[in-house]
Image (cartoon, rainbow, N blue to C red; front, side):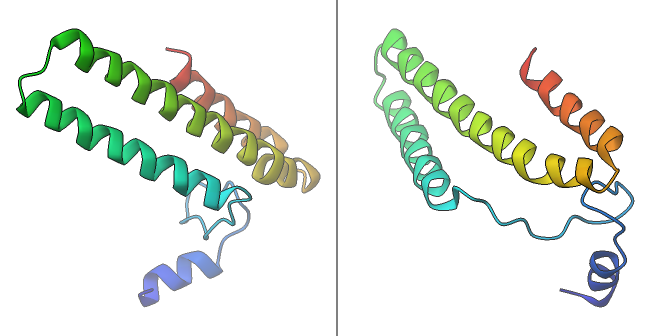
Length: 112
């Protein structure tokens, strides 16, 4: 970490301070999440191969839908972990309004 990055990380006032960089977060389901993301990565490579092999469009689209579903499941796990971790901590530290606003902005991205 460079000196300015270190300073930003050490001068933070809380988990949801938008003016500074977020510190590393311990993911409670890290291994399962990495396993899921590696599987998704393999599926994406498989779709690229299908396109390269001129496979039937519906078969490719079926795989795209499977990847979207897998990404949604990964996102929901991250969202739950964030809510139970960062947001809950912020509420306990009287920074709940800011944390909830940030959470709702993230939820809105998925509700489109």
